[in-house]
Image 1: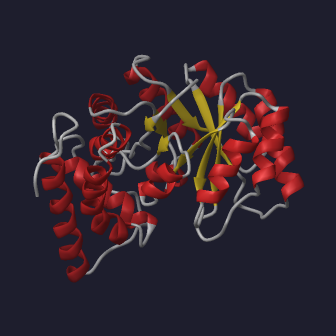
Image 2 (image 1 turned 90 degrees about the vertical axis):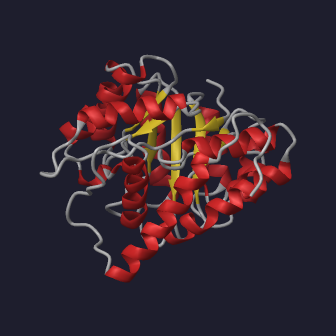
Length: 308
């Protein structure tokens, strides 16, 4: 599987009673594909997967795969706290037609590098699908370069790495170099480090779904040599990202707010417990949401940027 571009992590839409809104989720799938996604991923952090039951996680995956209709590949996040349950989820993902799986390190109990390598290797060997390893260390440098390269050498289906670390550029470049390009690197963290990634050889980014067309346009401009236009568009996105990434729940809510205002989902509700903003923060968030809505409306139809 060779991918370059934007792989959005889909939000999980909820109704007023916090039940899952399947119709809105299906509309979100269509929206992302129509607006330039090269693949889809769900349910992950941006999907509030940590608030879903195991049955609901599988149902989200089933809906996304079904609605995707093979138009683009779908990665299902299968990571759990044990090898056994992760392998079981891999088998379920494969049975519903997923094109790949994403696996993060167990988070409930901290483990050493040798234990984590054993976890990932057993998972990779238990599934025939391409595997994306999510290196989700939001405050540190994450796993070592050799960890990925050694693991990919033993498990050929480890084809992708999603980096969510501080200053990941050098690490990204070394993973690609030492694996001779066999491992493709994507960045998460809502695309905040987009130009860091492009400078160090990433294949793409995994932000939320709400602004997939903005990210896709930035990459298209960059890849066509319109670097300054790409940067100009990205810089207009930054105020939204900087504020939203203060807290995961804030980011998910702002993503849902944008999706709702774009007519993709019916509600911006998150499952409780969640973050609740005071009036001043609500006003600031709404201003930034409206800012990126205007930005999305002004996207060029082709590679030539509009003024402003």
